[in-house]
Amino acid sequence: MKLTSRLLKQIIEEEVAKFGDMESTEDRAEELDADELGSDKAHELSIDFMKALKIEETRLRRRLQKINEIKKTWTRG
Image (cartoon, rainbow, N blue to C red; front, side, top):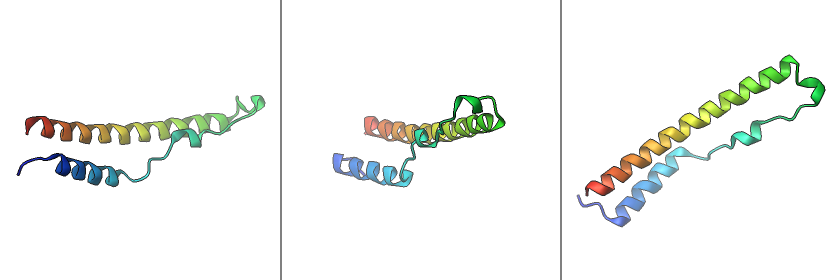
């Protein structure tokens, strides 16, 4: 099977469709007043935000890995 530009485009579109809508981690940040910065709530929000960033990082790494695999296939063909 020869990898044509049309086939490559179709493969990429299928892979991108698998990712679904990407959520922005910026939307999860919550603003706090200065008097709340030392509270447990601030620490919980910081931990939650870091978890959200880690999830986003993992998702992006997987996406990059798939893109690199497709690029390798393209350069071999």
